[in-house]
Structures are given as C-alpha cells and as structure tokens.
Image (tube, rainbow, N blue to C red; front, side):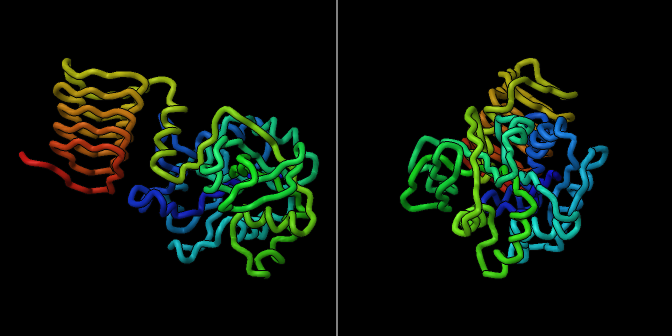
Length: 331
C-alpha cells in the first residue's frame, strides 16, 4: 500500500489568501496544515507521496526538504487546466504502479488515527465518514447512507440529504477498484472522489465506512480555517520578538520571529502573528495574520490578513484581506 496526499487544487474559495499560497501549506498553529497529516502517517511504515501542481511545486519542494516524502507534480499552472483528484490519482498510479492506495485530501484535518483506519481495511473500498449532525450543513458535502458499516447510497451535495453522515477526504482504494478509473474518466464522469464513490456503488462495488467523531475540518473557507485554529492550537509558541511592557498576550497564540508587539496591544486568544509583523496599539483575536503585515490602532477579530498588508485605524470583523493591501480610515 502507498499513501497519496492530494494537494493539487488551487483553492479558489479561499482567494485571495491562496492565490500565491497552496492551501495545504497555510499556517495552522505552529505547523502547516499538511504537517498534521504527515504526522499521522509516521507510524504506518508506508511510502508517502504528495501530489501537487507545477504552479505550487516550488513551495512544496522547499517544505519537503528533510522530510521523508516524495513529490509528484502534475503539469498544470491554472485552475482551468487541473486534472482533478481522480485524474491526479490516475497520473500517480501511472508513475508509481498499481497498488492499494490510502488517499488523503491535503486540506483535511481529522481526529482519528490512520493506524486504526488501516486496521479496519478488509480489502474493500473504505471511506472515513463523520456525522455533521445537521441536514442543512450536510448539503455541502457527499452524503452517505449506511447499513451498519456498509455504504448503501452516496449523493454528492444533495438538495435533500438522506442522512447527516458525510464522506471526508480519507479513502482506501484497493488496486482492483483503481483499475476502473480509466473507464470512469472515459465515460465523462465528474473528476472528484465523491462522484467516483457514487459510480462505484452504481456498478455494484462494495464500499465500507469508518465512523469517527471528535473533530474534522475541510479547510475550504475562512470560517473552517479559523475554527481549525481554535481546535488545534493548544499551547502558545512565541519566538524571538519585541514586545512592549504595556502589551498583553492572552494564550494560546503563535507569534513568529521578528514580530513587534508595540504600545497597548492585546494579542489573543487564538491568534497567529507571522514573521516580522508590526502590531501597535491593536487588539487581535481569533485571527491569522501573515508575515510582514503592519497593523496600527485597529481591532481585528475572526479575520485572515495576508502578507505585507497595512491596516490602520480600522475595526475588522470576519474579513479576508489579500496580500499587499493598504486599508486605513482617517489619520
């Protein structure tokens, strides 16, 4: 069996933050999103591959230095060219050979042990499923109908969900199932795992579910990104920074090297401050501030601000600010 982490998407729902930053390499606490997945693969004793695109390859090459992973790069530069998850999976199989594959979405954060997931694998397609507990919320995902641990129905983003159990981005596909991918793509089906599962069931292929609880996040929106930060940021990490004696830190927070916390600023709880940021007389909580951003005389709450921005004299709530933006009110 091989482990394949899919990180080839362009994450358009999180633009402008992800216009120049791959979603899997967005910071989350003191690590990147993908690092949480890599940590869970360490006790599997399996080869780990990461599939990305040519546009983001340089970022993954830098990240992967010293890590026991192999990069696979699909030859696309734009959203319109991307292969999609199933197409990228087929390209990986072409390069690596047919085998059973543990496939994980690179923006997927989950509480369960991959070792436990593997132990539940009995040679049939296995998908991790999570109960979102709300029919309205279930409409956003691939909804599964279960009989015990067997999946008997699957519908991608249904108007009327039949259950609140949804498929997450973790799968084990046996090689005899992966042999069907060329037929699936040749028939013109949508290039995503959910529709592939739906197609397999239509063809009479057995699919089983691994149920888990605690937490699961698909980092597809600013809200899910910030909620994941609140769940996973347990302890503060403060590097070499300059901090005013009048400033206050409310843990947990991450403040990276070179940051300056000046005046009567209040940082936290649940704040990430990137390298070389300058925060002066400002309150920041439940927010992620990328490197080299300047914030003065402002209040920032549940917001994400990209690198090299300047924010002055503002109150920002539930905002998403792209890189190099300059926003101010008054003097």
